[in-house]
Amino acid sequence: MNTYTFYQGRLAYTRTRRLGWLMWSSFLICALVALFLSFKLLGSYTHLVTLYLKWQDALVALLWYVSFLGLEGCILVMSFLKAVRVGHTQGVLSLVDDTHIAVRDLSSENLGSIFWMLNASFWCFGAVLVGLVPVILIGWTLHIPHVVLAICATGLAILLSLAGLAVSVVAASFIVIGCFGAVSLARKLGSIYTYQLNNQTTIRLDGTVLTVIYPDMPESMLDLNSLDVEDQRLLLSLLRERCITAGQLWTRELSHETEKIAQRAESRIVVV
Image: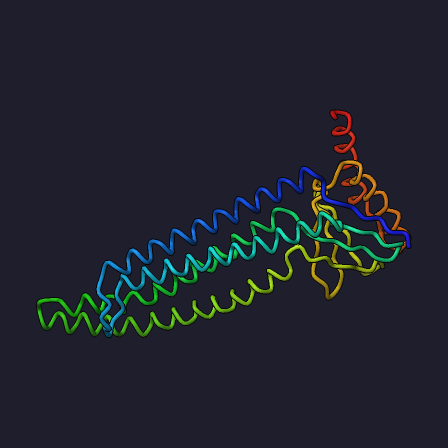
């Protein structure tokens, strides 16, 4: 079997691991600090059961959720670092004969995806708390000295609470969906996908990003800068041969991008 396997360059591998461990440490510190502050806040007020929501309880819930997100981030980053290690030993791209291409996305942009997913989850929880603000206000309106004003303000807060609860329920549903999405993301981070090289396969070059698209399969991307310069030239040459063999159209745009990458690779070799 005529198989070519390409590995992540040492510089790209080291950079990705350093960014990953830095992000993992940041998430862990964030989780521990939020947990510590929540316990400090818990000891600063009484915990009598009331018909309204205390603002301290809302703040504690927010801190606990931040801690949860921090731990979730640690797990996701660790999953990605594990995939990076596997990719370093088993390769990030393989060309099997003239029939298949296997791609593993190990770019540092995956870390950005983790951050933005957790960021969206944080703001969804913020929306939950915003929807509960009227419930918190009831605790203040009940203590208004003027009886008529207290009754009117409390009634208005109750009406707003009904609308706020609807907002909270919708935002909470997005959080639940996001939790399932996090599990799916943890499984897919750094996964390898194998595609047939035929006329249904689309191979695109956007700058230095190689994208492989095949019907009913996830899209895979590989930053060619993560490979050594010699591997970049060899990979592009082999891809061109295999695309022609598979009957694909090697467009002028692809040829132009290939030439630019080859020129950059040549210039880097000269400098070295």
